Length: 352
Image (cartoon, one colour):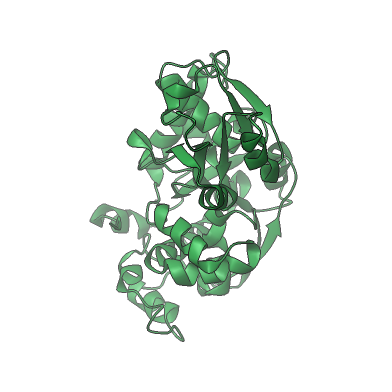
């Protein structure tokens, strides 16, 4: 079910500075040249405030992970013209460095914004980078697997076991550590985390070097389908069903000095996300050149994610605070961190 903005959202957004066009005008522009199969009326209704169309074309640099299916909205926004409809000329940068390097690049204007995983960004952001999380993009895409017939079917079964990860700061390692803690298992003392390259994780499981591993889509999904693995949990399990995992971060100076540009970026990307949710097969075809997976599998992955779910403003701040409290409990965050102040500092409402 789509979440549409309330009347209050539209009234608040009417105060956004910059050149504004009525939602109906932008909606008409959005579907010029679109085929009937691509058109979905939900997109017209899912405007995030009064659409901001910049008076002059504005160039931006946006970082993303081009091989992660969770960033599909970026590819769609570029190919389907959502950035262009807001008069944005977006250069996509497939960033391969560390998270600290990425956030520093955004904070120091080497890039203007980035899409990434909340649970990879939140610890480095505790250090004070001037990057603001402006929107949640979607939920889903992190999975935890065990071997078939291993007897491991729930999180608590992992006590005393070895779990494979791609790195010890990986978002899935953080997420499933949170789930282990919730299940009464100390993720720092009662399981062993072993690091392997992503394509080696299923092999390590087969060899018994680990009894489970966690991995994001598309590689995790493909390994499950190929090897008949048991999916023990994912990041839409239980109370996390509506928690965002992928976020859009924008450099603080851009928000403070050119808020309409930040607003246009958020609106264009979220409009693209709504299109993804309404057209998963077409979105999979857009993303297919970036992933070594068939369109049919990519489509199934997208249908399992929540690309229609985009927390903003207070909802986003609450979700980031919830993650912060959980990360503090598993000793990722410093115990001295004031989580409410932290969440307020690292988030921004650019649609108000």
